[in-house]
Length: 443
Image 1 (cartoon, one colour):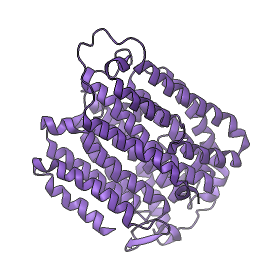
Image 2 (cartoon, helix red, strand yellow):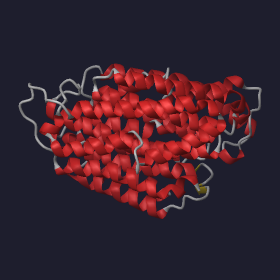
Image 3 (cartoon, one colour):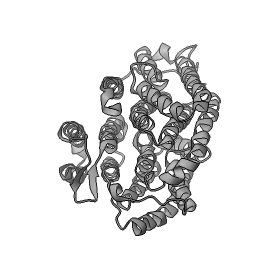
Image 4 (cartoon, rainbow, N blue to C red):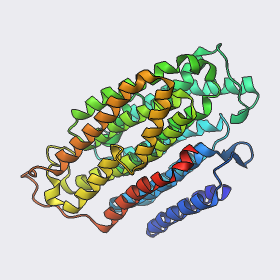
């Protein structure tokens, strides 16, 4: 495990040479395949002392981080072609990968707090390579929402260490019923990361103003840190969780339905995809709050599927933005007339977003339906509305952007490049092939 960490650290030196951009890109793909083939995920492995290691849950998320990071570099070809601080850009990508690698491989409650360091490279990506002057406001939203909840979390982690006399996850003890405030701090810190409805406003703001690499890292990996933290720290608050988790489950699922209605009102493509991420993650919150096997494994499955699917949809919106200079659905309509081959990829990724077979999202949603309904049969109605409206706003996005007459002000539009088709294929292929490996998630 240490070899992958050193590989990422030494790759930063290659970033200083601009001509090594594609070498770093290729090495990231090589690291993804070596990690997939060379790590045993079926048991808890302490690979670097007792502080860093890997378990069943973190293996899939680290592999997702490697894959999305490789695709980020592919999608950001315009940064390389324009030579706009490309060395600094790829350095930020590698630093982010190191932070996520350390966060997802953390077996200690204190080293888990490393994930807060991911805010700095993400903020620099948004400010340095963002599209609009308003990206500064988006950065303030990102920092304010996450840090307000994360500072109390740090105090709670110190208290966890004081009570358990160890930060090691398997040896942590339950707080019992004495520390309701600590339960609140732990839950809120990670729910804002996911994000949950009512504390989600930073996500659409950050997505709209971030470059394509920032959107991919936000949707693909950063939101999953919240689920990873809840999964590992739920042991500390399980006694209070049995009493109060129903509140977060009800708020998450009903909030997902409300956000689905908000999606109907969006005319900005990136904003619509960002709100759909909030709706999908609300089901993940519900699954984790049940604290049963089906709920947690369904959450892992949906997190990986959503990371690939939403990242691919952001790539599609960026492909249109690079040609037409707008993300508005009022301008980006009738694109099947201008880019007919790209309409196929819109259909494939949109169908995966609405959990059509054989996508990984379908497997995750089936697991979550099983886990949440077995916990409370009353949630069936909310889950039914959530799944239905998810399909409705995805069809709205696809039909409005691809069909109809195209905007008369569009006077030129090039077809897709091989790099873009390759990028979309590498999103769609694992998203649908992994559905055949359901035993990894549920058995």
